[in-house]
Amino acid sequence: MSRAIVMQHTGGPEVLLLQDITVAAPAKDEVQVRIKAAGVNYIDIYQRSGLYPVSLPHIPGGEMCGVVVAIGSAVSKFTLGERVATGTASHGCYAELVNVPAARLVKVPKGISDEVAAAIMLKGMTAQYLIRQVYKVKPGDTIVVHAAAGGVGLILCQWAAALGATVIGTVSSVAKAKLAKANGCSHVINYKEKDFVKEVKRITKGVMVPVVYDSIGADTFPASLDCLQKFGLFVSYGNSSGPVPPFSPGLLAQKGSLYMTRPTLFDFVSSPELLRKVANEVFAVIKNGKVKISINQRYMLGQAAQAHLDLQARKTTGSSLLMP
Image 1 (spheres, rainbow, N blue to C red):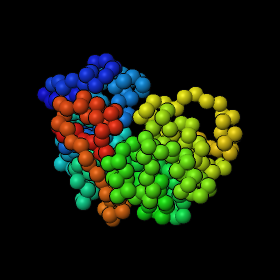
Image 2: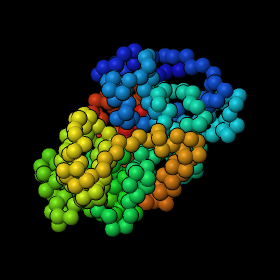
Image 3: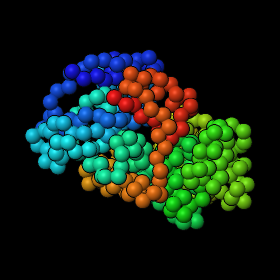
């Protein structure tokens, strides 16, 4: 027997119940992992609420680090006792044991702790594809990062600054502003107190920015478009305040022939080779000290509902972990 958070139906945090479960032996292409730490992410909330449909009953969690305890018959790249991690398991990580397709696992190198690995597989790889692939941040760029004190935001801001960019971060509190300033942001805007479009215009002396990274959604749209230069790119990669409302593509024309994309991590790590490439770049920037990981909330497995409440209420900063 093992313990896991199981939801029988979608709804509020109260549907997240700690239960005893039986974990089958791994399928031929799977690896069974004893979880040391699991990441808590907004995608888990979207699935719990029903915004992103899932099969029920459902064990949330797609991000974790743990130790290999059993191996499927067709798996050759992993061995018992190895530390492994995933950010794209899609489900099952709010648990003590999980079977994960070997194609979605990477080996965790020395110098990366279990907790750090669990905190970066989804968030760190998201930062990687955002600033290294969707828009390749380069020295001299000035960029806008919404939710700069969040799990992805803190990584993205540090990494972009290390690449030579000037980072304008937006936050929702004084405490978060201080955290963002200490993690790569040259300028921080508390959008609860100031109009972030006017502030971006002031900071850039009217030039505005080539890219806006937005995980907030409804609350920052369409104002995010007004921060962009002509031909600028609006990157919508989350919707913590609700989805961006429907709009006419003509709006992009009106505001300067803008581009918009709604990328997802799964497309950027769709093969084991791509997964290893992206993960290894994340591991490298952490090991060389360019990016430091802030794990500011830890919950026991049975506290998953509280973890969701805190994340939704914007009470968290950096990464949140569940500890089985």
